[in-house]
Image 1 (tube, rainbow, N blue to C red):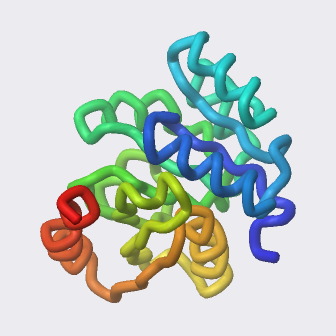
Image 2: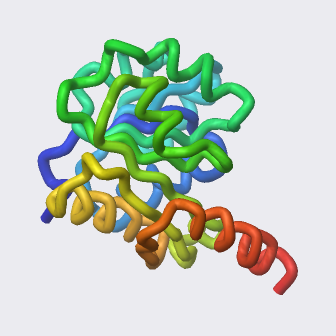
Amino acid sequence: MPLNNDTIAIIGCGTMGEATVRGLVRRELVTPENIIAAHPRSERRDQLVETYRIRCEADNRDAVADAGVVVLAVKPQILAEVMASMNGGLVDDALVISFVAGVSIAAIERGLGVRRVVRVMPNTPGQIGRGISVWTAGAGVAEQGRARVKALLSALGTDEFVTHENELDMATALSGTGPASA
């Protein structure tokens, strides 16, 4: 399986970050020991450790230090601060998967100094493993990296790859409120 030996860092464990953790553990895509979540509040970290038996860190740089896959699941308004806290701390070949709305692959590549970036727009049914995640990959993501992304996104439901980044924004506009209004 594409994720068996990966250490996965989840930066931000709000709704979609926790949904990713839950799905990875529930579907046994990786062992809980291979998941490291980063969250600033100690009570939240304690809750995640208790519920999922994963590792948690307060410091983003510590969380990504050994991670082959890094999931950015933070609000767009704090992304610059989050990237600054991790910059230079990622392993050389880390695959970065961004759930951050409205932030381009190029901006994340510049902000983190990496070349392997994927942009994903998950939707809220992902919280129960029934979402549809629309995604695209930057030029630095080879076929093996894409297989890892598909495996990770299976934790949230199904996925749909698009070839152009602007299609993510269109998909978000079309389906972002669909599950809530259904």
